Image (spheres, each protein chain N blue to C red):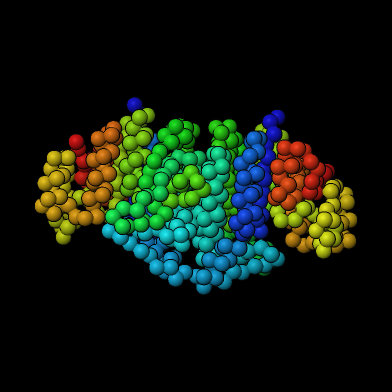
Length: 263
Length: 263
């Protein structure tokens, strides 16, 4: 099967103009088939604040009320997505910006109230339409996906970008050899958060439990790793967590940078 | 050649939730190949005001400074475009939302300063990529285009939606029999603006000059009509200006509603 890289870029890179520009140049230079999934960053929070809308968070996840849904639809689906697309176009990468609603590529269900927490307009992915994504990729386009979906009843829904990357990778692994890469501002999963070079080069499913018990893996990293192991168990060939600056070395030179996850 | 309807929907319909919903139901029900191009509406102005950014207008056209460009990219490319797409998806229309930057479908040049007026980040369309649009249409997708383009150097640009509809129609008339329909909140071009039923059923290029001289055609309508006659002269089969409510009757029942423009 042909290789497909699904690359997720985090909010910290998006918030930093220079880091984003460097990342997009690197991304554009990759000759493989690829999909980019981007996070949100701080812009949505800043714009909400400017409009007097308070951001609500529970366990590091945004609570999406109707006003916040408008903001994220604007900022993720409009501002961030289109600026990434325009930048990639200037770097000779024929990018096409999409949300899950576009061409119905990713349909979701509004998350039910759980343990008394109503996340609001947040979606849990129900179905990835891998045929349409594949047909776009095969026609020479490079999908850039915002962390937004729809419920099939006319509502947009906010989706966690890590989860979106993971479920999209699983769906496309029916048709491609999928390599999922999470790019962020650190060199990988760290053994000691104070030492930015203490990268754990490999995490297996069995030592993952130990690392969690010992408290080595921090709270924010757990959903990302849970998603990753789910993806591996469901057919994704490899999952890597690395610094955005290392993307080209990893893909083009096959350097084993960052943290690789294994069964 | 196969028929293709290019339908432009104005801001007044977009601003009215019920009118928009009715229009989208009608649009979804059309079985022909079709492209929807939407305007902006008042939301961008409201959000700008909320953020303390003043909207600047010259001759009824928005001056797009850097802050306004961010707002229109968010509102047109994100909020309005994605809500239309999600709504159409719920009505069984496989819509895909695009700006000119996406898949490089419409590339523009930043408008040069003219007569001392700097329009800012406003684009004049340079090239419509009719092949990619056609390939999307032929794969069963229905493009929904926001009035935004890019300059190929990484910048988004604000584009007049009427002009965008007109140039897109011209480009696609190489491959389709294109019918361009401008839908708005009036029944057509009016003989007497006070009488909303005084629709001029047909305007030819020769009586257009007379109507302009007599002042029958109002200022705001002139760019729309100029664009329309340009489109007809460059290969578009027909141009019609009508009420959004009349779209289905015009296309499915071939009722001669609204104002038709002829050579």
